[in-house]
Length: 196
Image 1: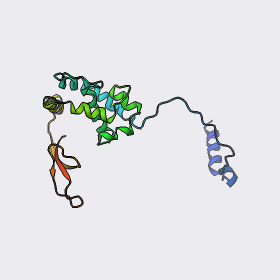
Image 2: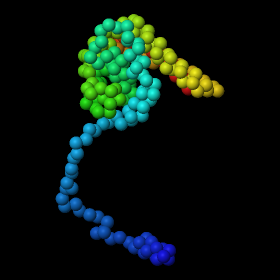
Image 3: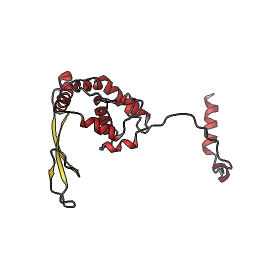
Image 4: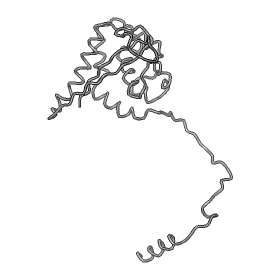
């Protein structure tokens, strides 16, 4: 049996193929059938969806806004989650929402049937007060510090990194910074702490 297989392999290897055996002309286009499927460019959110669920982030975010009396249709927690997902999929501005508004994976990760438009998200963010921002910062700190406490690494590396973000608006915390190309541009200096 093995000898028969070896003879077959040797014959196949030693045989030279001619031009007509290699090239092929397609005379007709293949029939393309489409099924009713929802396509996504952000399939990687499946992994983050699991992480966000394990952290119970949406529930914890709701706790940051319990003191607010007005509860918009989407909720403050959903809008903050939208901002988190916006960053996870590589967008920086809220106006980039238009690029993934109909994406089923983004909707699924947020637990929404429909995403808000930019104006709705902006109004909801505007409805937050200083207490809500303080609670969000507290939650952010606790999320960062939970992991080292739980896993107790032998060594911890803290990396401080700064970046300058330009804006055309008179936002709180901005000042006119040095920029050769646009001398009157307002900027905000952000400092990040990475824990590794």
